[in-house]
Length: 119
Image (tube, rainbow, N blue to C red; front, side, top):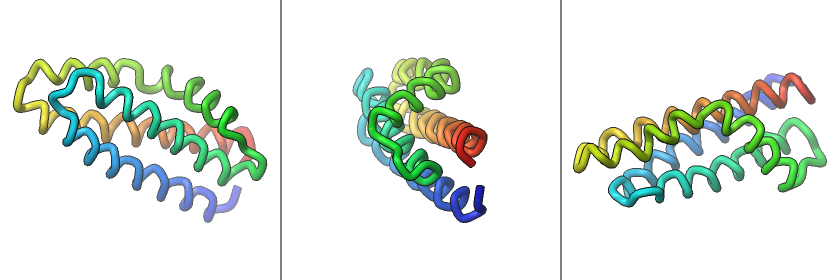
């Protein structure tokens, strides 16, 4: 495992965390929209992080990786994200913070998994 791999992977995580906040701000009052968007964003992030650690990494590998790590790592937070809509207009403050935590946590879990498996 080279430090440059970890740095590149963390850059993907940080970029996706910022993107998640922006997207969730725009969909804060739409039930389910944030979860759907985050799932696709997490799969893309898993693909890019996986391809940093393993040169022949497919989209199917990424989907399996995101599913394997994602559900275990963030399921409760996704429920909290969608429940935050009950806060009404405060959802514009609550949901982006939860989304950032979800993406950051999942990204770090993917990095740890990749370093352990291929690092």
